[in-house]
Amino acid sequence: MWHPRQFRDFLCKVKGVEALSDLAKIDSIYGNSLRAGEDDDEICEIKFYLLDGRETFDRRVRVSNRKRAYDWQERNNGYVVRYPQTINDFCREAAYMRNCLLGYVDAFVTNATTIMFMRKNDDVNAPFITLEIYDGELTQAYHRFNNDCTSDEAKWIQGYCSRHGIGCSKFYFNREIDLAE
Image (tube, rainbow, N blue to C red; front, side, top):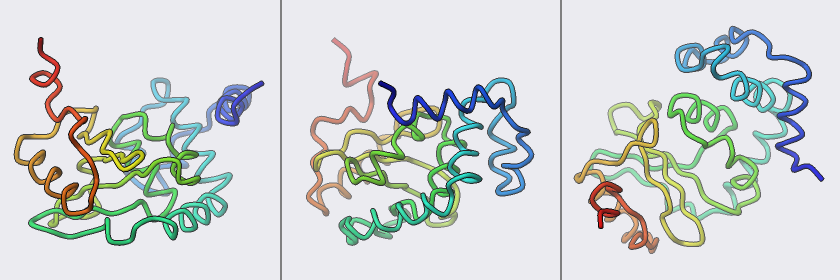
């Protein structure tokens, strides 16, 4: 038995990968962040969400967000934290950040996990740090390429978690130091 995501990936490979230019017409971040030949699976998956299922996934994102704690979104001390508002928000973040975020679409829209975007106040549309909160605990907070946060960013995120009753004691903000033996 296949997981729906595995089946979508299989169908993408069978159909072949269309030109990246279709995505670049939607948003230049796709053309700047993805490379045909290297990122074909991700390109195909993003096309599935944006070209084949955009209306459906936008609706699922909106419905999902209505079930989330609205006050977890905030603007404070130079940063903005917000939920993805559309499937394009989600895909843009995944393409730029070069992480496994697309693997969380189904979990996000079914409210099995919470994904939030942390931005700098001066450019709220530019991906900066992606947060995952699962079962009331911060499980991920990473920059592009899953790079760790700086100590100042970690302190801000810890304060954010404290303000909203989100646990973060199990998250390693600096894996090199926290996991050293």
